[in-house]
Structure formats: structure tokens, C-alpha cells
Image (cartoon, rainbow, N blue to C red; front, side, top):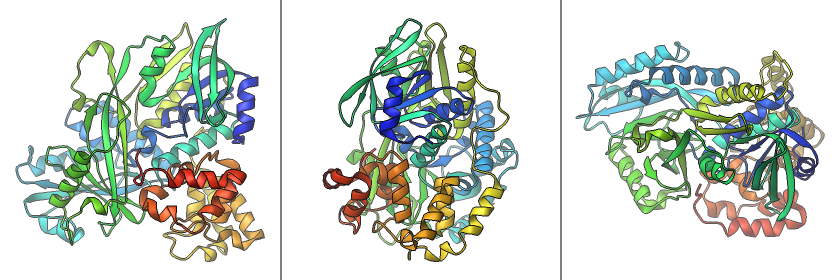
Length: 537
């Protein structure tokens, strides 16, 4: 595996690539993993950190698109349900079934029985892969979830979808790791300044944003996987496409735990839009908003906060109403919605999250629009087929390019961790074995050996988090962490569930920074402490 950032940048400048991918969100990450597994010489760069934009601001759900039944997009629902099931099957430690408890208020636009029939249809689209839906009376809802205010409710139901046990950006990063293990050259904080097609290849002027040093990358094919910035990048490379993006802003707020159980509470907000109360570790995430915005550069407003808090207070029965003081963290991102150029002004509310891929065969240029985490495996497969069609040679393989290691490997690891689990730090919400396996896969064996040789490596490295010293050692050498925000916001969900002021003053922050950054440790701590007090996307 090559996740040494300095070495990768050096090789990017020296080698001619088959494919260079711009953008390290979910689309770019799965494209890199799929291509690298097929022997393609692939590089990937991102001007910020991996999963730094939309792919770190989702609801952490892998869902089959139940809301698209209302707009009669049955083929899309069928496809997304298959994709969700595929993720659950091949990432059983990371993508797990979760129950949605949906309450229908009086006066809703459809009768409860009709909506419940929709959940049964959704279950059938999902090939009965999950638990069956269940109709719930008001009393049944209250018994299952006392935090729901049933005054004004007609009835409700439970149905299943899937949930990421870690955060979305961690899931994306594991595809980056998978690509690197197959010799992909990946580097964060590297920006494409200029890209031109010359002599049947792409010549990219790149800049290392950590040093401002520039270098040149050459590739036969260029993939624009820049998420919300796809249109902007295409303009700079003079690419005309049949699709472009509209943006919908989504905001989530983290508060102390509301639901006693690990389930998603789903409602329809005051304006008719979906509203979720989501589990996030030991905390609860509430939202989201859905507002059209003109630019991908957006932030949480007081109006966003008040909308979410007001709906939470209206729909939930809490000991005391939620206020802005209860917000532990917040995040904000845009959903890039793919639209065909000839559509002109579209009904953006009705647009789905389906992806679109535009290809310029003459220039060997590919643009990925829209998409969502649920459909990521399909994106990876489609990109590989397109790249092969552009005359990039690929090796034939019968093995999958995605998924966790085999069950036998996991069983071996769990057995070997039996004694080590006794060293799990006090207060941890799960044993070291399950967390190590989910986050690091087969590399967890290296953490196991480190702890066997030095049991102190199982001790907590940073107060309020679950990071052990064995993990910090691994991260320092293998996860391209350039600053503390990379570690605490995207390699983990720490800043999404822990108040910023707690982390600023956490025991071990300086020691962890020294292990990660050496002589730059104090500056990195200062930079982190000087960041805004709430976690914005």
C-alpha cells in the first residue's frame, strides 16, 4: 500500500498515468478503487482532504430511495434498493440495517394506510432483504419511542433501510485505501491549477497546497469527479457536457442523545419535507434542510438552525425544548443534483440523487454528475467499463474490487483479539475488536500485533475520543493526515459528536499532534484551536 503522501506526489510527477481522477469524494474514490483493481495505472488528487465536501456532509444513510416512489421513479428505487443490499452484504461491519420509525401527522397529504402500503412495496423492491414493515398505532409508537409527541399524529409504521456505523467520510476513505493497496497514486491537498489536452494526453499543472510547490502530471484520460465543482472544473478544461448541477443545501445539527434505541425517527417537517432524528454514536443528529442554493459555497444560517430546532421541538416530547445552546456541532453541505442541460429551469425539488456520466471520447475526458453513497458500487463499475471503452487496457479479474475481507479472515482476527478486548478503554461504546475491524479491515492485524508487543498501545490517546495509541501510530504512517481536522472530522466523527471546546482542551491533544506532525505539532494544535467553534462543512 502506498499512502505516503510525499512519495505519491513524487511518483505522480514522474510517471505517465492511464487515468488521473480529480476529486476524492465518493465518486472519485470508487472510480480509483475499481480501476486500480483492474490494473489501470491511476492517480487521484483532491485540492483539500479526501471526502472534504459533500461526501462528509450526508445523513450517513445508505437507503433505497423510498421517497422516489411518490414521484413514480420505480426503476430508480429498484436500482437503489439493489445497491443498498449489495453494500449491506459486502460491508456487513460498516453498513447495517436500521429501523425507521415514521409518524404521520393528521392532515397529511395521503392516508396512513396508503403510505404504509408504500412501505410494503418498498420492501418488495428491496427483495425482502430487510425486516418487514410494521404498522403502528399511536399507542404503539409511544411505547416504542417515548420521545415522540403523538398528539396530532394519526398513526405510523416501521420499515428498514441501512446506516453507516462510522461517518460517511470514513467510508469514502476506505475506498481510497483500497485503491492505494492496488498501487493507485493518491494525494490530498493537491490541486489541479490547469489541465490541457496536448499530444493525445492530458497535461495537468498541479500544486501541493501544503507547500505551494508546483509540478506536472501526465495522463491519457482525465476524470472529473469534483462533486459540486464539476461544472466549474469542466469550464476550465473547455469541456461541453449534456449535464450540469443544481444545488440543494442540507444542514444537520448534533445534540445530546434523544432516542433511547438505535433507530431513525422520520417525520414530515412543517413544510412537508422529510425530517430525521438520526443516531450518531452516543449523540443524536437532527435535520435536514433542503433549500436550493446558487453556489456550493454555503454555510449554516440562523434560519436553518431555527427551522430544525422548531421542528424537533414540535415533533418530539423532550424534558425541555432544544435551543441553540444545545447544539454540540453542525454540518452543512450541498447535494449536487444532475440535470440535463436542455431541460432549462427544472423543478429542483423533484430531482432525484441519481448520477449521470458524460464522456468526451475524443478528449478521453469523463465527468461524473450527482450520485449518492448508496449507488457508489455502480459508479465504480460504470467508470471501469467507460475507461476500457476508451482503449485503456485492463486485466481480467474474477475477484470483486469492493467489500470487506472474507468471513474466515474476520473470524481469525476476532479470535486473536479476545484477550486484547479486555484492554478496551473504560467508557468505550464497543470493544476494540469490532471497531478496529470495521475501520481498518485486515490492517487491524497490525494494530493487534502492536498492542501484543506493547499493551500500553491500547490506552486512550485523546480524551473524549476512542483513539488508542496503536491507532494514532497507524494513522500517522498510513492515513495522509495533514492537520488535526483531517483526523477528528473525516478519519473519525469526533468533531461531530464532541463539543469543540472539549477537544481544544482535551488531555493528549498535544501528544497526539506531536506523534502525527513532529516539529509542526504546536502549530497544528494552534490551527485547530483557532478554527470556528462549531463544525461547519
